[in-house]
Amino acid sequence: TSLIAVAVVAAAAVSVMAQTPAPPVAPKKPYVVKSPHGDREDPYYWLRDDSRKSPEMLKHLEAENAYTEAVLAPVKGLRGQLFEELKG
Image (cartoon, rainbow, N blue to C red; front, side, top):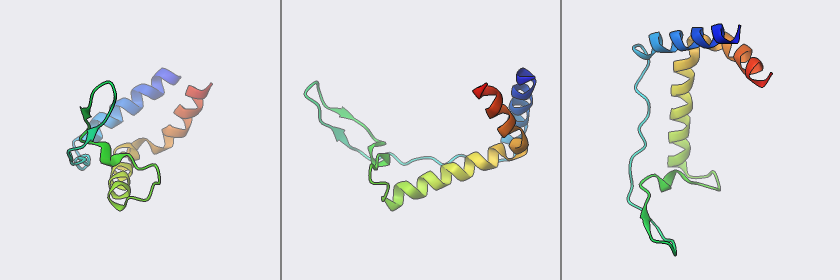
């Protein structure tokens, strides 16, 4: 039964992709992460917000959550069932 549920979810997701909005794209912002092992560029460092208070990061997170809900809306009823099967 779990394979059937996964197949149904996958098929529904594929058919919905053509109808859903484009996923949000996080802008890249230059940032150098300092390290004793060598510095590195991390253009998405601005998304790290341990205080969870950055309005820009929260806005992007809300957009990602809205996109996820839009994509998974057709299989909303199966999500709980699939989650329970995966836990089992």
